[in-house]
Image (cartoon, rainbow, N blue to C red; front, side):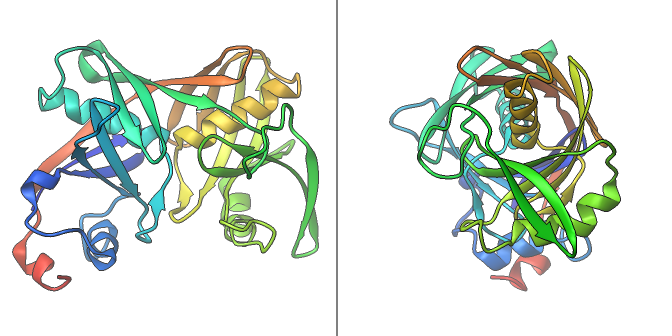
Length: 277
């Protein structure tokens, strides 16, 4: 099984092209390949390109626990870079089909930077289109957190704090992700506003755990601070893995731009594959 591995600010994904497979990826396949001790190690698998009736390419995104993600901003940027590297695109602009919608990607700086249209942020987890964030409260292990729901194709819980660090995400992230009030679980962002054009965030990603960077998390964290009037429409999101820029129009449609780096490419050993087929 051939693969390529990339990272976007430390958020790493393995790209597996279906044309190199003679069987479908099972859940056990995905878990083993993503395992950092028994496999290659990654924050997820990008399975594509596949054919699409409505866009130029189609992509499936799998978390390390083998659940399928609705969207991943960094995954989209990595997949765009892969298409560029493999000369599968003839233009710097193209579209990718995800679950239920298409996304526009723009490759620049010879693939080192990629922008993707993340879509319109809604401040709810369901199909309702809440026009502004609604403050809610959750109590975890005797500590109360005020949070805002947000959705950019997948559910998020944005928590604004005066001070944040990785420990708070690691201590409370999993509990909040799996809280009963979040029917489909949730991604969690702990956010500190730095100034009108920059924020800092620590991220607990649904199905993946503590994450150095996340495109969708950056988008919703920026959207909440923009909607609350704490930041302007063009926001740099600082994460442990680096900085992503999010720019919004007046309808809260977010465009994300950031760096992508290729790590390696190779072939997964048949010995490993045979143990998980």
